[in-house]
Image 1 (cartoon, one colour):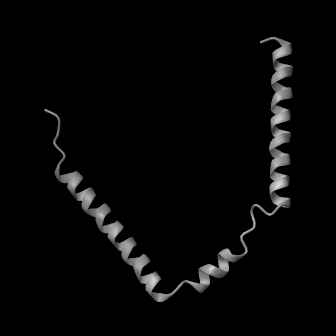
Image 2 (cartoon, one colour):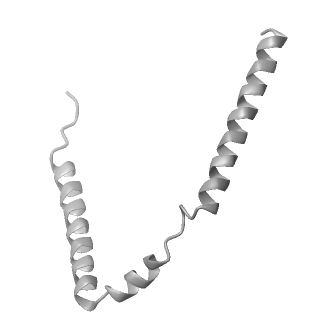
Image 3 (cartoon, helix red, strand yellow):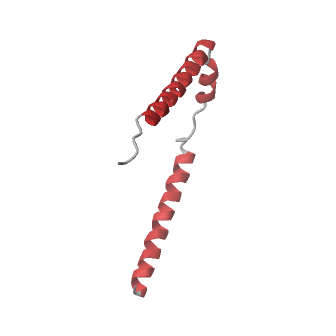
Length: 80
């Protein structure tokens, strides 16, 4: 590789890195990452029924995975 190409690659990568850094700083200053109501809403709308539903969904997923593993074991045929 020639020296000019390496210098060009370093210059372009430095420019793009600086552009990304400026975009990040702008986003933080303008509040793009702020979500003040996230935790408040999570506690406000979290009730016993939602927890039961989440546990039931997790249980169904486990049963499905177990059934799928058992089915995969039964359908295995060794090569002839």
